Figure 1: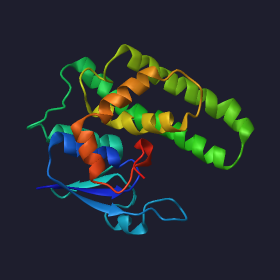
Figure 2: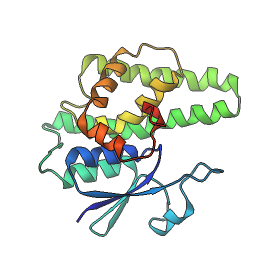
Figure 3: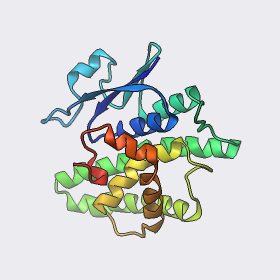
Length: 210
């Protein structure tokens, strides 16, 4: 049975399409537009899950939300012909860490920055938001200077970390060294599965698809 992806253009669900494409899984996309006023998913998605948000998938009668949970489910469920399961306990722990870090730290602080900047609260940006972003993305940068991928070989961790890094590199929110992140981003952008996933959607501005 194919996987259904509930997708908002230019959103976090782009990563799920990329993962499905990489795993060579049959899937269908149900695309929705964001509400122009709230910038959120349309209310009809609440008919599928009470949270009414993307990314969200359905498969074999299950509805799964939250990026990290979806990535874990897909990687564990579909292992043929492509197996992204970690090869060692250390790699497994690294994948788990980066799955949580992507949404719990990196994306969270990017969203906080966007909301704070929109409110023109410059003092809060300088004293709270910018230092946190320097710490978080400096940590990511150091890791990618020392490792080709986030957790051993290419994994679900790289899928999860793609969007926060793409947003950070596009917006250049704080001034830090980004050579490691740029090297890694160029690497994923050249992957056939990444390019194929881009071709499935109307736009994804973080890599220039408008």
